[in-house]
Image 1 (cartoon, rainbow, N blue to C red):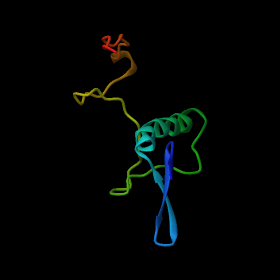
Image 2 (tube, rainbow, N blue to C red):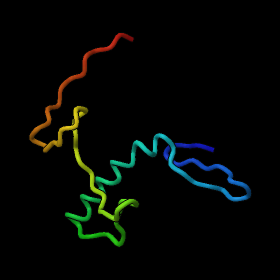
Image 3 (tube, rainbow, N blue to C red):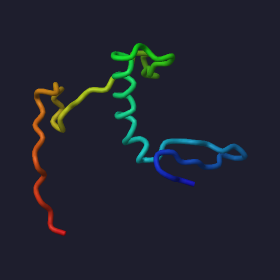
Amino acid sequence: MTVGVIGTGNIGRAVATQATDMGVDLFPVLAALVQWGDRWLGPAGVEMQHRGCGGAVRAELRCDKGHSLAVGDIDLVARPETAS
């Protein structure tokens, strides 16, 4: 059964829970919120680490050309209208 950001399925007799595609797309938002909370509210009892090297995971803004962005680098513009 898949509803929203979490889905479940059977693996043999066990039930597995995993992120749906929607949940995977939401993950950077959650990582950014954890990072924000650690900075402004104090470190949480857990942290996210890269499984490959143990480095701390952090959210970062990038454009689709790969440039790292600061808030002052971003403009909010209207999207072109699309035909309906």
